[in-house]
Image (cartoon, rainbow, N blue to C red):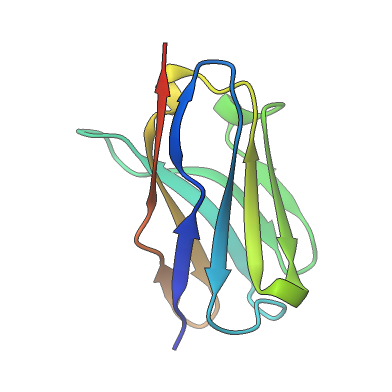
Length: 114
C-alpha cells in the first residue's frame, strides 16, 4: 500500500547537521500526517516532529529551534533538517505516515559523537 524509505543518517560530531529524507512510494499530498520518530537503544520510540497535509507542524520540546520538518509533495518526500546535533540525539530515526492505516519506514541511524 505504502512504502517509506529513510535516508540521510550517519555519524556526525556534536554541533553538526544532517538532513534526513523519507521517500514514499506514492503521493503524499493526501496523507493526513507524516512525521519522524526516533528510538534509542533501551528506550521507547518517541515523536520528534510531524507535518499535516495542511502544513501544520509540531515538534517535541527537545528539538524545538534545532530541527525543521518539511515536505515536497512533487518528490513524494518529507525531510527533517537537524541542526546543532547533540549526543542525546543519537537514535534510529523512523518515518511515519498516517492515512487510513499507519505505515512505518525501516529507519535510518543517526549517531552524534562528542
